[in-house]
Each structure stands twice: as structure tokens, then as C-alpha cells.
Length: 294
Image (cartoon, rainbow, N blue to C red; front, top):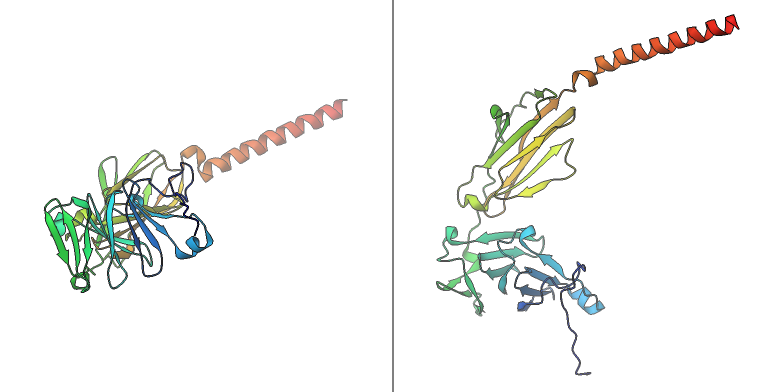
């Protein structure tokens, strides 16, 4: 025993440090992980192996990972190992095994979204209690049902505000490939998930194959615009989840191509090649004549 203290703080520029100096709650999970709820920094996970090795590596769960808020007041672990987080924007459930999140607010039956710091309890029977501005919330996690329905998706494409095509994730036929001219410099895709349990909780992932390097994850955004795409072959794909994070992984897709400008088409380059060949031939003939006269 040294009667000494170690201090763990947020270090700007150090991605492994604690996300915020204001820690509201610390909970030890069944696997030995320490969960640190912070004000403004979301939730931090310090794995048991890192703690034993003296490695100050905090893994973070924030709005970018799906939380409704980065201010987490309390963390309670239920019997199945899920973590329940109270915040100033509702309640969240985190699955530590894969990092998936489900969020609950007044649209899911809560009386209010604002919870309080220090107001939480787990009973021996597994009942969870959270204090909020609207009173005390209590529930048995194992009795909550999950929305298991992968949502259908409708995807539309417009150019210059004109609707060109619309497809659904239920369509069995591959849609006819659209062809855009080189001067169609504004291509807009809109999409929506047909699940209305809590539609504001639906999430989306989209990618333009042939242009984007990776999938883009969004929630409230339900449209994306591409401008001045280079000539080539493309496929726009979108996936969607319902309010409980169940994804339609098949998604909906629209293939299309963009024609090159006339002066950049294969025919144009063939003409350029002929002209260049003619110039080289004329130059060579002129040089031959000069050598004969010399």
C-alpha cells in the first residue's frame, strides 16, 4: 500500500485518454470492464486486460457511435449483460459484445427525456430504476420486446428536380440502368425506411460504388446529392434499420452511368489519334524531303 493516487484525465490530442474530466458514474461490468459515464464525453470503456497491464486506453461510445447524447448520468448492467444508460436525451441500451445501441425516448413511452445524475438503482430481482425530471422510471429489461422487423426501403433519384426512377428493397427485378449526360451535374438520391414505430430513430447507410470509398452512416439525413461526377459506371446503394437497430442488409440499389463529354468520348480520342498520326506522318515526310535536298 502506497496511499498514492493515479489521476486519469482527458488529454487533448490523445485519442486513448478519458473523453472528459467530468465523470458522473463508474460501473464495473461482468467481464471486468470499467464503464465511465461522463458529461459531454459520452461513455468510456476500460478493458480489464488494459487495466491489469497499466495501459491507459479508454474506448469511447459517443453520438458518432449512435448515442442520443454525450452526457451520460448513470450506467446499470442487466442480467443479460446489456448496459442501460441514462442521459439528458432519454435512455440507451448498449450491447458490449458488438457496440450496438438502442435509444428510447418519449416516443417509446418515456414520460420525459431528461434524467438526473445520481438517481439510479438495480434491485436484487433485476428491476432497474432511473430518476428523471418527470419522476421515477422503473422496468424489467427482460420483459421489453425488440422490434425485429427489418424495414423496407424506398429509393428515388432525381436530376434537375425531375424524378427519374424509384425502386424498393422488395423489387425482385434489377432496375434498368440510367444513363446521365456529361452535363447532368446534379444527381440527388432520396431514401426512406418504411418502419414507423419511431421513425426518427431509423438509421441509414449509403454508398456510391465507383465514387465513395466506404459506407456513410446517417440518421436524420434522408437524401444525398452528387455533383459533377466523372464519366463511369456507378451503383448507389442504401441500407436502413428500424428504431431498435435491426437492419435491412439487402437494401435498395440503383445502377447508372455517366457519359463522357463529347470531346472526351472514345470516338473523339480516335479522331485525336488519327490527327496526331497524320501530323507525325506529315512531319516525317517533310524531314525525308529535307534530307534528300541536302
